[in-house]
Length: 387
Image 1 (cartoon, rainbow, N blue to C red):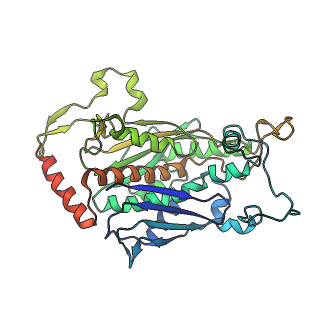
Image 2: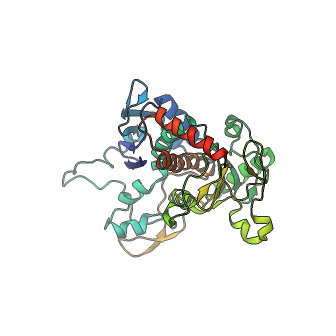
Image 3: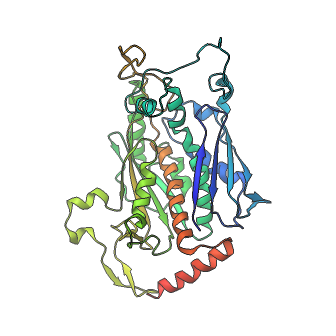
């Protein structure tokens, strides 16, 4: 059994829709579970006003009956509340010949998909590009990831995240296990309150200057079964799928697992995880420098992924650009946006990692029902602990 998903919809269109296929039957799933994660995506100091407009209440319209999945594709629907103000601009049917053009975009923003997307799809009005390239689409990716997260939770896998950097402010606190609510209570989802205050200040200064900020976030998965993925073929190495999925998130420009780029600065004796005799297993690790993935396979250690997010491309003090209709120099188009979305990106990262791990679990163990999957995972855990 494999897991696959698709999303559709535009930022100011009527709705976002998503389908995830491959979820076994018998998984408890309801709208409240989806809404809880959707609200976490809205967290973080530096978000724009749209977070106050959208409720992000998700309707389950397929694949679930009487509170549990039934084995068919799970279909989700998320209404864009702001669409009511954009109904004419984003209308699906063709307008009359005398209808005026509304809010067309002909000046691309540096760092955004606007210009290249317009070239690729032959769209003169760049709104046809930016509406789909918008990070609003991630609201549906989080919803689909929440379905995968619910499946993993049944197998004892948990996910969490935090922010390590916003601009020049860095949280150097080593990871510690804390309730998710504690991290979510931070305005920037950082562990160290002193670093969090510095991050807030960075965002305030950027906002006052009409600028934007990026940063670094970390996602951790615990309780992951041993030996997901494979070394046998390049495209089955799990860290490749993790990196691809995170790099496909809007504004992400770098991904590392475990020591990541830091491994390039140390010797081998400081880069690898030594073994020692275990308690209930023949061997155990002394450290987790590999970040839970070694040789393309999960080690049973926590999976630690970090991603670098560039500053958002829409600036209230716009950069130089060109009007594509006239070829004349002008300032870039300004679209409503956040000043900083790194805390939200960390939450989105949890859903992305959930999707990757759920797919890897189903690839290794299969199972058309949750009970069948549980039995196979439990049997494998007994085998793995003996080796």
